[in-house]
Image (tube, rainbow, N blue to C red; front, top):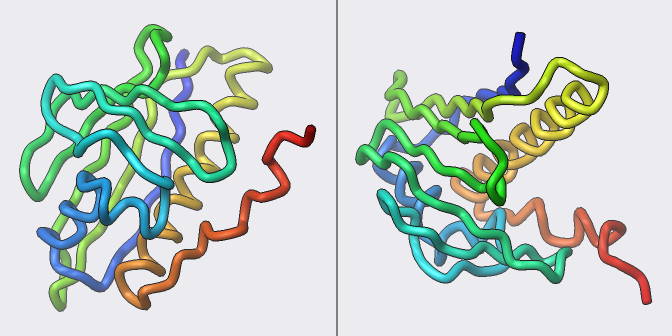
Length: 150
């Protein structure tokens, strides 16, 4: 049996606005990344840069369906590592966002990775919600402790 990481939240914004905020780097830099080399698109690899890490992370858009589905690979070549983001319209112009990251082995290492990725995606969703609903960047300064020391 393989393991997945999952997280889900409701955001009080229309689905089109939530979708754009996930795929466009100029919006993502307000809550998740420092910057990116481009927006998420089908079959295109971009690089994400995070404020707390010196590395660049390659991210390949797999399938992007406007306003309801985004998938990408950011595994760096690991097999069967796909992130899926499902967007569903809800009441009062709100959007339910569900993330599933596939798949980790059912081993001690896989369990630890699934836990870490679930924690990371829950943080992503909290940051996305705070940014869209209140204009707050929760990530700012939150991971300074992870920066390498010299």
